Length: 459
Image (tube, rainbow, N blue to C red; front, top):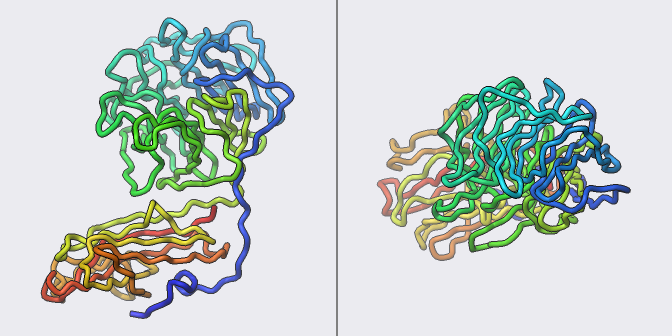
C-alpha cells in the first residue's frame, strides 16, 4: 500500500485551482408586498411564471402573486375563507394551484379549492381527506397527482396519505411516517419521488421534534436513514430546485438541546448537505418557500420573524458533498471500529475534512485507506472477505489505493484532510476504510472498520 501526506492534496491529485462563487441570501425590496404573516401557503405557477401566495390566519384570505420584481394583490370574485396552515401546490397538468385544508379562527377545513390565475373555485369531490391543518402537500408531476400527508384535527395526529387527480381524492396509504403536524414535503423531479422531512409529534420519543426523512414513490413510503442531517424541527420552509434537490430553511426546534427558531439552509438529493450561504434571513418558523420561475431561485416570504420580508437564495456554484458510512466493520478488543466524520463534516473544496475512527485500542496506529472504488480492487471484486487470512469476519470494502496513519487519543483516531480549492475536484468520488492493528482481535492481529462513500462538493 502506498502512503500520501494528509497535508498534501486529496488523493495526491494536482489540478489547477479555481475560486467558487459563494451562495447568498438576498433581502428584496418590492414596491408592494403582502402584510406580515406566517402559516401562509405558496406555490409556483409554471404556466404563468408567477409565485402564488395565499392567506395565513388573520390575513383575510387574500391572494398575491410575485412576478419576479414585485407582489400584486389579486381581486378574485370568490375566495377561500380566512385560512392559515393550509397546503397548496401547482397542478402542472391542469394549470391550477390546488389548496387543501387549513384552519380558520374557529374550525378546521376539509375543502379543496383551485386557483386559475383569475378566480378561486371550490371543488366538490365524492371522497376527501378529513378536515385538518398543518399537513404536508406537493404535486407529483410524473403521476399528475397532488399528494397530502399528515396534519392535525384532534390527537392522534394524522398519518394517512391521500392523492388528488383533479377529479377525486383517494386514500393511498395508512402506513409509513408516524403522524405529525407541520412537516414539509416537496417533489424531487430528478429522482421522481415526494420527499417528506421533519414535523412535530406530541408524545414521540425521544422528543416531539422529528428529524426523519421519508420518500413516497406513489406506492409506498421509504425512510431514508443517513448519518448526517439537519436538526429536528417543525415549520421550516421547503422547495425543490431543479438539478440541485430539495432545499429547506429555518423552522422551530421545540425541545432541548438547541431549542429555538433556526436560520440554517440545507439541501437534499438523497443525502443532506448544509449550504451555509451568506446573509441568511433571521431565524423563523412557519415561513413559506417556492421557486421564482423568472430566476429559478428559491423565494421565501414571511414567517414568525421578518413577517413581511421577501428573500431570494442564490445557490451559486453550490454542489453538495457526501461522506456516508456503508457496510460494517469487524469486532476487535475494544469493540467494532466505526469510521465517520467529525460533526457531520463532508469533503468541500477549500475546507478541511476531519475523519474520526472510534473503538480503537489505545496502543494501535490505524491506517486510513483511500480508494477509488468500492466494487473493484484491480481484478478483485469488493467487498473481499479477509477471513481466509485470519482476519475473521473482516471484509475489505474500499480499494487499497492509498493509506495514511491516523493519530490516536484514548480510543479515538482522527486525521485532518485539507481539500484543495480546485473546481475540477467537485463531483469526484472516493472511498475510505480503516485498518486497525489489534493483536488480540484474531489470528491475523487486525480489524477493519466500515466503509465510507465520499463525494467532493463546493459551498
